[in-house]
Amino acid sequence: MLDQDPSLPTALVDFPHPDDANGERQRWRFDQPSAWLVAHDPSQVAGLLDAAHALSQEGKWCVGWVAYEAAPGLNPSLPVKALPVGQPYAVWAVFEHATPWSGEAIEGTDVPWAAGPWQADVDEARLHSQVEQIRELIRQGEVYQINLTGQLHSTFEGAPAGMWPYFMALRRSQPKGYSLMLDARTACRVPGAVLSVSPELFFDWNGERILTRPMKGTAPRGVATASDERAAKHLRSSSKERAENLMIVDLLRNDLSQIAQTGSVSVPSLFDLQALPTVWQMTSTITARTRPDLKLSEAFAALFPCGSVTGAPKRQAMHHIARLERSARGVYCGAVGLMAPGGRVTFNVPIRTVSLRTLPPPAPWSAHCGIGSGITLDATPEGEAREWQAKQVFLTRADTPFELLESLRLDNGVIARLPRHLARLAHSARHFNFWWDEALSHRITQQLADLAQSHAHAQGLFKVRLLLGPAGQVKLEAAPLAAGSSTPVRVALAASPMPEADDFIRHKTTRRQAYAPFAPPAGCFDTLLYNAAGELCEFTIGNVALQLNGQWFTPPLSAGMLPGVMRECLLAEGRLLEKTLLLADLQRAEGLALLNSVRGWVDAELQPLPHTLPASH
Image (tube, rainbow, N blue to C red; front, side):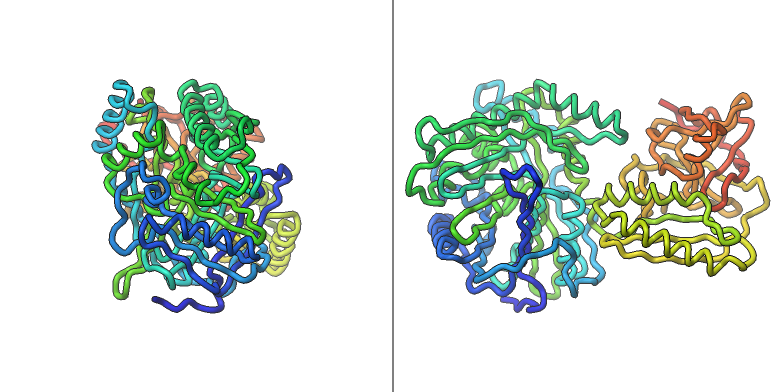
């Protein structure tokens, strides 16, 4: 097997304390394991778990995972697909000690890396067929619910050192969950490393009390505060989502009763909402006091796999999962976790998890991630497809490095609209979980002041580029502002709609792939964009204003665009009003302008429109 770089850790763990309301976290770094425990067959998994747990009770630390397909080795009645030949069913690293970890990036991993684009093994037609098959099984009384999943695959560039900054990017994209990375290349090549940032607790057990917190019920986050609140309210009151959650609660209560002291199973919390960056999730909490002398393998035999990733009843659901799904799940939907000295164990359900495969050179590294949802009788193929798309946003937010970007106007030693730029930067930093605090804000302000002072006697206007990295790294560049065309500038209408707005359209970053197809044609200053509904959105480098009946209007943010600083100022001054603007409005407009904070207000003239405009819905 491969030798690992001794300067890099073998594992990182960043887990919340399941019963700590104050948000204290367990953050540990692990270097150079003293042993690896690997199960090459399901029958070896129970013994491996007990052996690792015994080592933790003796004072060791153990970090590892159990594959979903290990289930029949713990409970022979549970059917699964077999893993491909050579893939282990469980891998655990044993460490003599742990080092406290700040949660910051690991030194020596500042290398280029990239994952994606991601390709799914389930297309629209297959998903539609699978959902309808499951609904028919429910009508026949075969099951109440089945958790259906598919696999996403991509290449991974920048290995091996690049997998550590990739883990940090995934962790920023899906914060506050159970983050664990294990570089197991010395134990196995497939998967060579597991990068898990999942929000769902499988179970926490201190030898006496066991706690599980299944996650079932999902709604995409809203763009604005009002729409986000509506999404949460809908999830909280949805009979479909509540029924889905309650089914899994009942399943886990039954599972826990197999290892619990009589009468000790309870549900202290039901239908709680957890706000994740891209989705709202519904959770419930079930606890019990375990029987004396319970083995960890016995707890796994009763609980594994977690009911939230199987469906109910568990055995029938798993039978149909093995029949319907195209490939084995592997680590996805299994368990990843930490065994601490003294024997306390915390296991996570790896549902936001990337596995990296490290095949022998010259084969490229590849990345794999599962996505799924619970199918009930009320499910629709269209609704499940939307849920899968919402859940995989954490991947696209993290698949390549990027920085936050602000473009500022420097004129005679003064930076225009600086407070609004800093407020937008702070908002984006918090959204993407980049480092941000008052000290950083003051440092950026001082650096900008120094830059402005150094250009106080320079002639002409300057464009300042402010770049902010994930750990608070700041870069400043100032360049003379290139003179634009004589006004009004000539602009073109895009030939096709822009993509649906995502994080990289609603926030200003160095990742601008969404705008790449809309480069202005020869002789034009910029391109005017519209969405699939035929609503005007923005230009590629600024917001848009349209004059109708003597009043200037700009589209609302719900059309899908960047909230420009110049636009915000003009709205606050009353010079602009928000209004949904359609493509047809271009033909009756009395004026057109491009707005950005560097150039200000730029009058524009649209090149002749096509005879037939795209339809507005």
